[in-house]
Length: 120
Image (cartoon, rainbow, N blue to C red; front, side):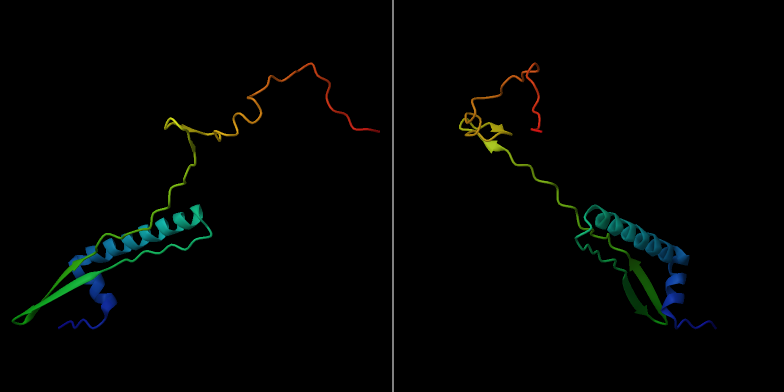
């Protein structure tokens, strides 16, 4: 008679080893995803929870194990925001509406003009 007292051994035997393989894969994918998140934003901390749910049902002289690995909820990187200026007519602009008139608009560059020189 083989008696199972070790949780590590039990996990390796459940579902003929498939549960252990799936849990290992989920852990590795989660670790990689967290490393990728930290690489994208090194000044932040990221965390995730990996769960293994085990439902044990006793009936007569048997105990049935039903296991589940719920999907891991990984944090999402916030998307960057973009700021535009609202115009009176409801459109948006990349330039501040009051600064457009400040200098009278863009000027042509005079390519024939002498460059600046430093005094000797």
